[in-house]
Image (cartoon, rainbow over all chains, first blue to last red; front, side, top):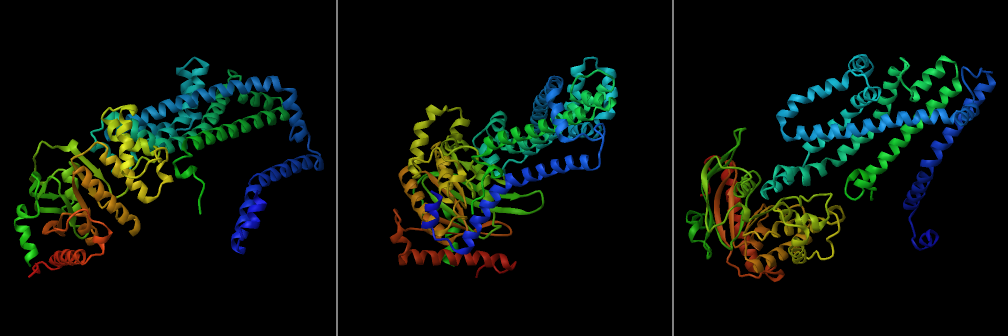
Length: 283
Length: 274
């Protein structure tokens, strides 16, 4: 098919170069990062061998992989614990962030009054707040959820608020002209207009909720009260079990990447028909 | 100038229909101290195709927003007649101003939807309106898939779907290329002649205002005010033949003279025509 097109379409050198360039870029987008990754892992392995680094300091990649397989039961049950906190807190961050943003959007006064509180929550390091939460809340899950939520909700709140407030002025006039109620304006105009902003916030919050969950477990785990991946890391650290530490670390990273990819896909699917960010550039 | 004389007695101009709305001594001062409109007297009659023509800053868009109720006058009053009110108004903005996430059907449905009309109930009216603006078959396209002219057609269909008695248009074709603009001019006139609504059309193009309108009201800037009025007596329907006729050229020259005069009246404080 392309061969036929190539012969029919007589491209000038510049266009032909551009087509070649695009084809290369398309392949390179996947091949390059993979190649670099493979190279880095190979180098990691070589460095361990060349310098005769003991396993409890830096295990070879193969050993980590073997651990991932041998300790699968332990590690994956811990991963599930961490994932549960992550997704619950992300869900709560979406509900809380969007809910507060809609509340803020009802009146400039509400926004002016309460936005500073959200910022205070955002800028205070969660590790510093945790001891307080530990005093006030008994339930382990609630503790972790609250921590992860505090970390994750702000980008959703801030982005959605921005989106709700950045509706085209003429469209707002159009709704006013047609006698739209406040609810109709929210439902048919402001919420859809805020969607790209919300999804941008969601992508950030997805990663943050995982970080929040792990950090919360870390602090809680230090007191021996957690069974998530973070506590596996702490435990492995105490026992100088570096292979398991690396295996847990890799699981966390992969989970983060997966969350990001899924949320990116969701965002793309929702916006692909109309929003600039999801459109292929047409030249 | 004899043309300005007409402005002294606007009620005797080309009107046949009963009065719909009169702006009486309307003024608008913004909070930053700018006088957008000063002492505007203007009578709009049923069936008029009235253009507000003037340089930028003459308050023509402000006047339109006042009529639409998007803004309130600082002084003077708007005298509505004939049992008409704001719910009988359609508005077309300078940009198409469509919902980018909604398809053509949903965009045109919107005014009815806001009045509580269901999709099924609205469908005949929406489809009929889309046919009127020559967009049959495009109801599932989203705005970004349409050309500038087509987007403007959707915008006009949306304004007309509620069957308003008065259509306000704020430089709707200013951003379009000439060929598309001419086509939309023709189609708008056709629509107007079939449905006999009233149009107030803001433009800064002499040629467009003369081609479309039965009355051209020329405005001057700083402060925004009505400078003069020109009755365009050429009969409808107007088409490409009219667009190239000597009559049209002569009318454009007249309107242009009034406009130049209006612009000069602003340049110096005491240089008001002759």
